[in-house]
Amino acid sequence: MKKYILLMVFVILASMMLFTGCQKSPESVGEVTISIIGYDENIVADKEVVTIEENDTVLDITEKIIAKKEVSFEQKSGFIVSIDGQKQFDKGPESGWRYALNNQFPSLGAGSVSVKDGDEIIWIFALTIDDDGGITTEDAEQEVKEKLNGEVQLESAVNETTKTIEGLFERENGLRPFRVVLAHNLLGLEKEENFEIIQEESSLNYAINILTILAADLDPYSYNETNYVKLLADSQKENGKFVIIDWDDYPSTQAYAMAALELAGYEDYNKSSAENALIGMINEDGSVGSYMDVDTAAMALLGFMDKESEQANEAVNKILSFIKSKQLETGGFPGFDGSENIYTLAAVINGLMAVDINPNGQEFVKGENTISSALMSFYKDGRFEHEDPSGVTEVEWATEQAYLALAELYKGESSFRILKQEGINS
Image (cartoon, rainbow, N blue to C red; front, top):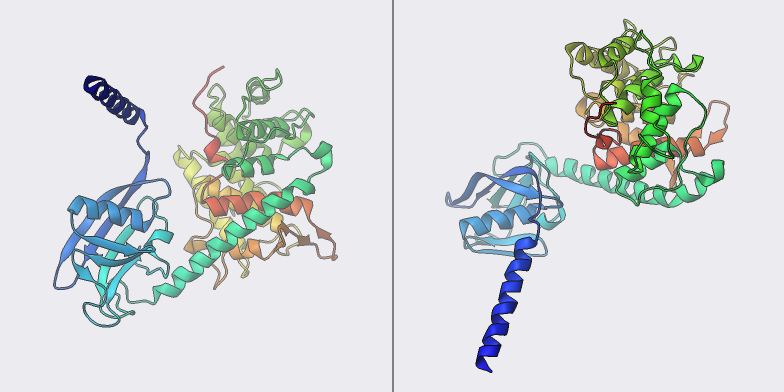
């Protein structure tokens, strides 16, 4: 009996070890540095590098380094009360542990603030609630609060707009247009099954179909027995342009075609010729095409996502200078009629994200207004509205285009760039 029990214990332990060994270890998504500086020159950690995993918080990173250093530690509800024997109130009624993330002091507990690759965390034992330990001389707490409020606002808008999308698109039997499919893919929602495939022959339509199919996690080389990638590639002319119908001879078609082939991993087309053709459409002032509008300039950026050549980088910088010169004091951008336009603003966000430019970076801040605040000025109750100069309010197109831009701002990445496939030749 004893032998039987011992045998069963051995089998169970062996199974547990085997099961544990088969589990995948969490994937690293980057690194952060962390320092922990107590009173009386007690340095627990000095710019230690810690690997981060998805959804890690400041508290998670702190616990990792504490475990490595093997010092005592106590936290309550995400707030640190003791590290290495140095406890809250040790140096007075306002003293205790306080952390800075990238030289700014959040008001939230360490368990509520996520980290990303490249972040720097510094813990100090503050003597007063305003003690910054010499980390920063500015009142950064309000900045952090505003940033957090902005993120909460974006998240709320994303969630509410996602709920209202269902009833907004009734054309083509309720099939989802490509921007909605891209947005849902970026947000990690369930893959779309009922999406719009444009039937009319056109280089632009083929490019849009490819992007839609990729976002639905399907194969554009054989979707419904049609190779949309080859159809698009075969439409390239000797001058590098992708043209089937007259309307295709336009910068946005060229940019979308280049982006679609690049993201589909197709390499058997004349890339340099295509790039030269798009660059040839850029005007001296950085505008693109005959209309010389912000929309077209923004869409043209999609054709330069990889920016491999020097001339491609020069082209991007030229277009960016033009877009910056047109930004309004509201943080938004003018449409064809010169007034602030949500469609133009959404196109700018898509274009900037495609070339890895942060739309909310300092270069696009106007006074207290940002591109995000400009976008949210069109938001109302789970949808976006645009009122033209004549007083007519449009919802469907405004919501479709703004929804994709909103998703990109919220996720902090391009809905196009994440579609990248491995290289394929014909």
